[in-house]
Length: 110
Image (cartoon, rainbow, N blue to C red; front, side, top):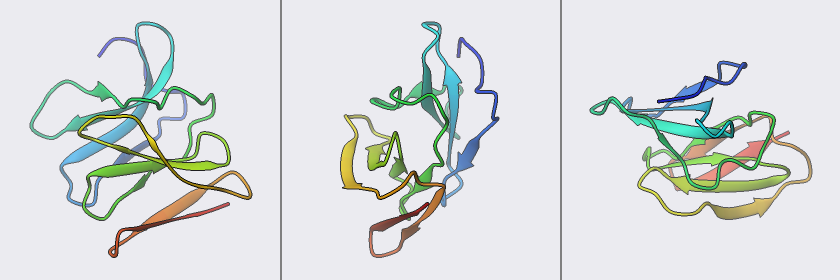
């Protein structure tokens, strides 16, 4: 990985313990969420997560396939397998945390 880690040092480990998500600047100077799988050395940027300046909390889906984040009062989720983020819902306030529910529901609280 080129660039530097975000100053907050935010990171999150998936429920299955196989993935790590953290915020880092790329060579282009843009802050993005990046994912690293236990079996690989390289962390890859997650598509569409370069839309914020403050590092949002990351919430994992129970199956460790998605992470949810709040780029600004909108809860979005993005697959670790790639693809654009999907909007889950609008939020009444900025999220400061959340949980992934076993029945595939995501919850955020502000």
